[in-house]
Amino acid sequence: MRRGRLETLRRAAAERRAPAGTGGARDRTARPPVSAVPAAPAAGTGPWTGGPGEGRREPSRLWHITLSVSGARTPPAEVRRGLEQLAHDHPFLLTGRYAADHAEIRYWEEARDLHDAAAVALRLWGEHRATAGLPPWEIVGLEVVDRETYHQRVTEGYGPPPVSPVGVHPF
Image (cartoon, helix red, strand yellow):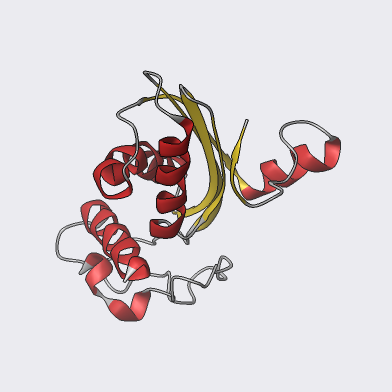
């Protein structure tokens, strides 16, 4: 069910990007399973190459997202409960840190480019606010970096270390 909703959101985003008449994301033969992270195919081959009259589509990439939110003080137990429900609803959530007036969530998102990954990240808090029981806080920070940059930062000792332990924890 959760994976189906995520796939529906991705399909809708792909349809908005697809040129008219190409079939967009409705063409199920041109899409890998959600769990697959495709490598870029050789030029002119593979499922990412459009047919006659279609442009070449880019394969999805993984993006590391850090979303920071803040607002009026809320009992920490309510914040924790909301973040735990968000982690249940959004299975790609790696870690959530929280305090009475702010929180930070980190996760991996699969998207075609940075713009798509950022758009999904900016909608995440608002779309799950009611269903997860999240506080009515606003987004105050967003970082989106590709997989290679994230791993390079960690290797060189810059940026946040890999998320550990996974789950929801106080700051």
